Length: 142
Length: 142
Image: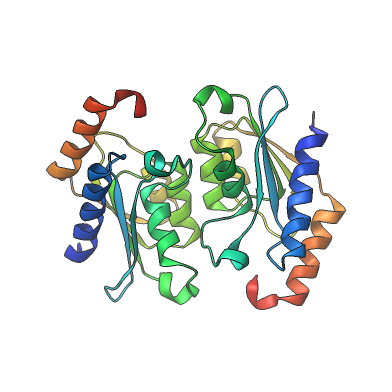
């Protein structure tokens, strides 16, 4: 079942990214018992960063946690995760990845499935609209 | 052919990590024409970071580069890359990954190969000794 707080947190992060003029992708890592462990958004433009994608930002903001905290966790992300973020989910043994949309971009979904990670794609309209607006306004940044 | 400057930079970074009391893994990203684009070492202990592994640090320190800079690049790393760092190499379309050693840990080597990335494993003694010393002294950190 999709945790409303997880997806809502990811979506709020994507909106923050949009408000900052950044790539509007957000993520939230939620523990098996429903606590938000970390949340964040893509900072490529804001920080000139090659590595702070939304999922990486959520893991970074969660800090160093004991393995037990990641056990059974779900990563919520507004866009299908790229190869790096796919790998980050695998490193921390995230059990499930909930994806806002994968029309704009399809990342490592097949690989996640092949490694036993559950996937859910919400096909959320706001996630798609945020990306469409960004790509329309800043095509060279996408 | 292995670029001496790339592997030496990665090894120097691993030594810096060891001197700081951190996980002694270093990396360097080298362009097709032999320039070091970025270098760094694992900062898990130093920064309490869940994401700053050596390869991520090298990519971070390289900053945001045009795609042409990554084209044909080689990632040098003193230890076989974990799933996250494997994915980061794929994201930036690194052509080749040169690995100091993979006796302590084997990461996403098969996946890299399946995605067309060339691999070279040096089985370097100093890389192995740095890790062995770290694991002996701080077993709970590994």
